[in-house]
Image (cartoon, rainbow, N blue to C red; front, side):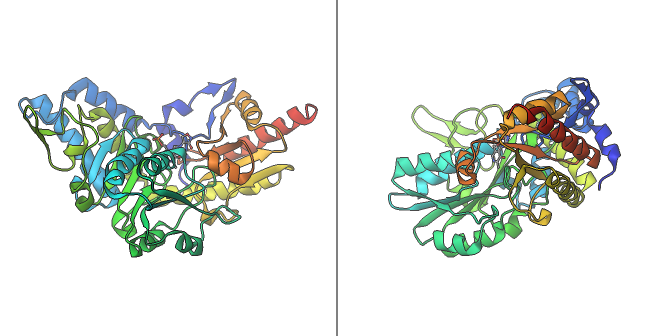
Length: 409
Ligand code: 7TS
C-alpha cells in the first residue's frame, strides 16, 4: 500500500461532510487534485498567462514552452513515438467523437462493420451509432462472459474482414474489467481494421504504452488523473492523423487563409482549432509529473490491494451483490454493487449522510445496465489517496444503510 501521507497532498480531503471526515470514493467520475497541480495552475495564471504560438513577447514564449512542454510529458507518459501524435482536446468524449467524425467518415462505407462491446461508456457507443447511421455501416457488439470479461474467442468471432474500426475500453468504469487490448489490436489488424482505445479509466491507474499496444488511436481525460477538467488527449498514429481532416476550423490550426481556399498547420496543431487549452495542458503536465513521481506501478498495486480488501469486506454483508470479475487481479480499483433491493440512490444518500461520496446511477453505460439486468448500481472507486480506513468507513456506512432501510422494505 502507498504511504498514507499522500492523502495530505489533496487539500480537499481535509474537511468534514455532514459532520464526518470526508471519504471520497468517486474518483472514476473525477479525481481530486493534489496541491502540486493546483499550484501549477495558480503559477501559470499568476505569472505566465498569455496566448501561445505567437512568438513575439516573453510571456507568450513562456506560455508556449509550458504548453508544448506538457505535450512532451504526455508523449513520454504513454510512450508515443512523437509529439506530433499527441493532440490536446477537451477530454475522452471529444477525442472519440473526433476519431468517428474524421477517420470514420473518410474510411467507413455502407456494409462495413464497426465493433464495440456491451460494457462501453456512452462516449464510446454513440459516436459509432451516429457513424453507422450516417454511412450505412453495421454496429456490432462483442458479447461479454458471465463475469463481465471479454473472451478472445468471441472477439475473433465478431471481427471480420468487413470490420473497419474496433473501439474498446481499456478498463471498465462499472465492472472494473481490464481488457486485453494488445491481443484485440492484433486481431483487428489481422482483418485490416484499426483499433481505437478508450483509456479514460486506464490512464489514471496503470502504465500505458501505445507502441506495445500497437493501437491506432487512444483517448483519455486529464480530470480523472489528478489534472484539471477541460483537458484530454487524443493519441493517433502519425500516418493516420496525417491523412485525416480536422473537424474544427479557425484560429491556431490555420496555416494560410485565402478567400476561397485555406491550408492547415502540420500535426499536431491542425487538430487544435481556436486558442488551445493552455492552462489545462500545463495542469495535466503537472499531474503527470506527480503520478510519475509516485509511480504508476505503485499506484496500480495500491488500487488492486484496496479493491481486494474492499471486496473481501463487502462480501461479508448479507444481501450485497458485487458486479464484475471476482479476482482482484483481473480488475481495476473500483467496486460496483447493489444492496438488497434498496435503490442505489438511496444507498448513496445514506452514505453521504455519513460523509462518504460514492456514485449511483447507470454510470453512462445503459447497455451494460441492461446486460446486468438492473437499472442502476452504486459504485465505490479508489485512487492513490484512499486507504483501508476509507474502505472500513464504507463498509460501516453500508451496514448502517442496511439497518436504515430494514424497516422500509
Ligand atoms: N470513457 C470511460 C470509460 C469513462 O469512464 C468516461 C467517464 C468517459 C469515457 C468520458 O470521459 P469524459 O472525461 O469525456 O467525460 N466516466 C464517468 C463515470 O464513470 N462517472 O462519471 C463519468
